Image (tube, rainbow over all chains, first blue to last red; front, side, top):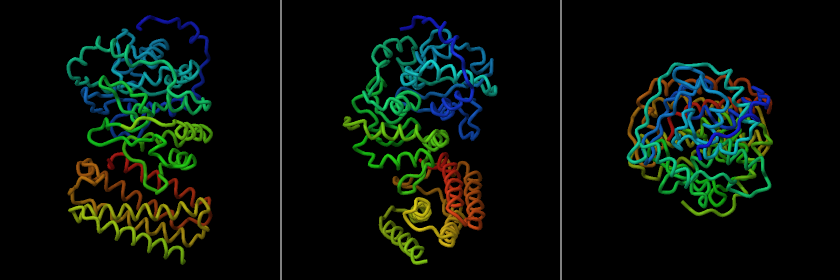
Length: 269
Length: 144
């Protein structure tokens, strides 16, 4: 699981920062990695708190700071982190970082995102240590966690491959909207059927077709404007997500909406 | 004008029905009713924007003025930090009340400005987007 792969091919891919900005938005990096309540989406200072039953996690500084951020990383490090959940020192990241979703990010998107990343500012905000309950505080337990929960295949065998890629990989929607098993892995059989909030009390709603009775057009409208069909407005983390989806291409939002309507039956949470 | 009257009557109906749900706190009921009125008005604008209802500048102006009025009442309505289980107001409101107030004032000012400038569907689309951004900015931090 921790073997080094051959990265020679990544270095041969040409990155484009404007495309990388689009990947940055679609992947929602700023939703978790900006400072709490910071409205600037490009200063990735970290510090947001995520409470889970395994402990409290703090998003790290992933700005280009060489001291506190990832300014010393190489493309291989970036790839290992996003797609394999490994630090440059080959330590496992906690799966609060959604590498189980990003695992299928395309090489081109990865390189574009990396190229865009080089244009982002450094910020010298120190990282805060996670407070993790035993035995999860022992990083090596994550080897076992990955054996159980790091699955490489697609969740849904759909023909709408763009929608599937945007939802299952870049958008990592399941990380909040899918319940977790006893070890904290995503319950694929209850895909998108809602989950406990990572922000304290409350529930993240189900967006499985059984529960989300919006039309595809209404889903697109929500992702574009934040307005529900009843003109309630997106709140909390989802408001931040809408800041990014609102600048995505209409065709991509339609592909996301189509995917959500095609999930099929899933177990209830 | 008849349609506007319907929107206002509907808004009063929705809120009066809601008022009969006893939440155990008048303060919470009042602020929840106010947010529902806001949604009803936004929906009326949205119906015009989507062509479900015919667009008229006067109607859009009147509805936007209603939104301005409700936005102006937000700081007073949320002054009391009473809460009940059904409330979606985040405790962060009362920890950062000046920021919360400033966001409400921003919506009030923006909506007041927009109510003077909507003369076409294009203006209405811009207004919806602008008001929506303001709503999200506040909901992001202050709605659970």
